[in-house]
Picture (cartoon, one colour):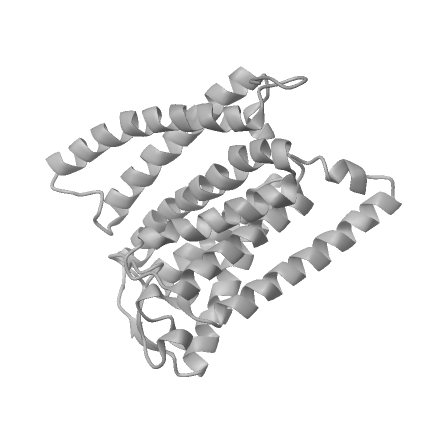
Length: 302
């Protein structure tokens, strides 16, 4: 009932993981919240300090829970989506792809008259200071959200129901998690679920989450800091450019931001198609050269 042939059954593993994560999250968040309030900050503030503190607390809790589960399951921590070849290179390519995809979307919205770019609002040292601070924050956002859903959760759930069923379920949950965001829209929820599935495609072919972490962090950084748009309904303090949506909300995204625009759906489908085509070709070339996993071995990535 509790243990399969070699390890704890997937359902029980996930249940234990959530209990540990809940305890560690409370252990990290309450002191951080108290410390921020003592210094006249709040976790709800859209500032680099408050955001970094909250994200760091969550990330430490997640890493701690994953370490404990790795010890219980006698596995290395990196086996949950962090191992594999070319990790640094994939992370760098992910950064470039994430920012480029967001810039393409912003450009399309601006050309269509659905987004007004109001000019640069930061100057001097503030440009680099906020760029680095928000860069650190959104790298933690990308690492937390990717590792939480597509790290331990994906690896473990896939043991029970298979990679693609678990990918579909966790992608839908990722979309639904955005229901709590103020200013979120139906299109934004769908786009969150869709980008979650795109990241699962990258995990399947690239064998790790580093491309997805880079893409996720750079996309959010581009929205929140560089272009100054809303990100799932949230506008941060200290952004390089100012902008505002205009026209039909279905096309502009309204208060949700660019990812709430219907234009994001064909963009993400294009990213998925390019990712699939590129990675599939590279995998086929590696197999022809006798390098890397075969298709049957690739199916066991999780």
